Length: 329
Image (cartoon, rainbow, N blue to C red; front, side, top):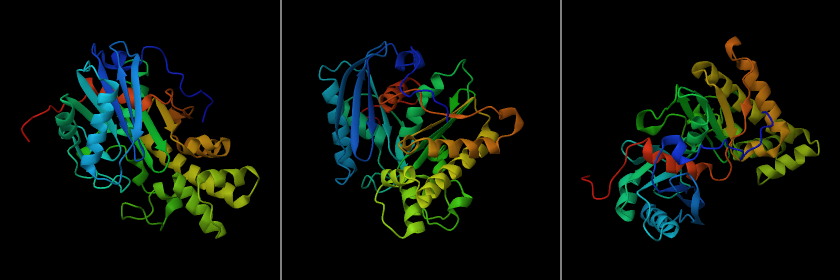
């Protein structure tokens, strides 16, 4: 991965320039542990911020209530005209439904996210998966209107987003981009949380790398950071676990690049931040897969910093269907 710093977005790539909103909008980012909210002015400036814990064990209704409360906190005067939410899980932006989810938020699968949040806030709501929403500003930053992007988020899971010729792909039930469930030779025989075996996520995610280290050594590690620290000291098993996960991710991304022909490939999330050992192995595996027209393409870190998800969520209000309060169900 190259050395472009994160959080150094080009100017003019906020919600207004991405989709020319001309209005005050709220962006929400829902994760398994935290809800982040921001109020954006019509020129893309952040007017207010708020964070609160996600009541992840209290059920979907409690989570929707907490999202509505976060929106009210950043917009006490009711200035916003719309709300966008980037949410964990598989989200279908057309129906506004969470079509699939892990147990990180209890009872989240099957939630009517769009209409449920619209009814609670009184605002029209656009919704999408958190990784696709985060990738939106990256797509908007590409030169021209027909750029193609391959975006991967490698953390506690492996998520992704695919954009071709200027259009983000959503697919049936909103499942497009979930690259953590592509087959990986390095994960052969390992059970995946989705019920299948041999998927990328179980070898390339943070927990996947940690579990691989524990299989190699028979010793507990607890967290990826502990494995990374041992690798930095030269422990062979730790180095092997990290480079195996990185190689698996790089090969999958290289194959996807051949299929999609992206102008840019972005790899974000917490796992790449463990250092060059991971990034170098991923890049080497990625480039080894590329067809000749794509040689020279390398994975890069995200342009946007901690505001990426709420920024992308706010921009959803002008590019995706809006779900209105009180609409007929």
